[in-house]
Image (tube, rainbow, N blue to C red; front, side, top):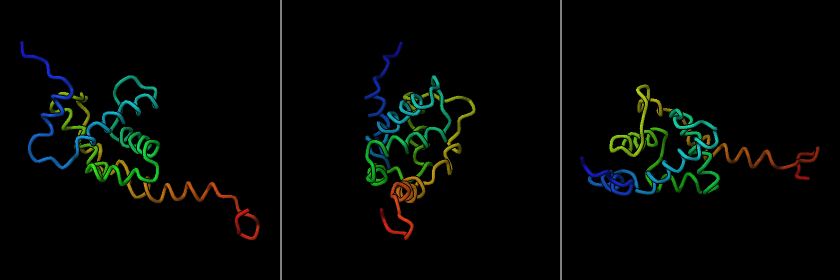
Length: 137
């Protein structure tokens, strides 16, 4: 019976060769999966869209206004990148998928501009109180 590899060894296996993503990207996607499962209250599987939304929420709680910059420094620039990371982890056995899970599930699942740029600005603007003349109270 072959010896079972540790998560660190499996991650080392992913990191060999041409790699567009930093090691921290894989760790963060894995942490985001745990966060998303906890937030949804579901045991186990979440959809690609749910993971992308959970990752965005987790990134904003961890890094605030720097969330997009941190993710981009690791190579994560789109929901498709999140899907690619997930499926690379599936290929080495770090994650499992169902028969229905596909890379395409991640295509367009998250609008980075909306979530990390405009969405954050809108949230900040909605927190300001204005008097009747349009100035800040």
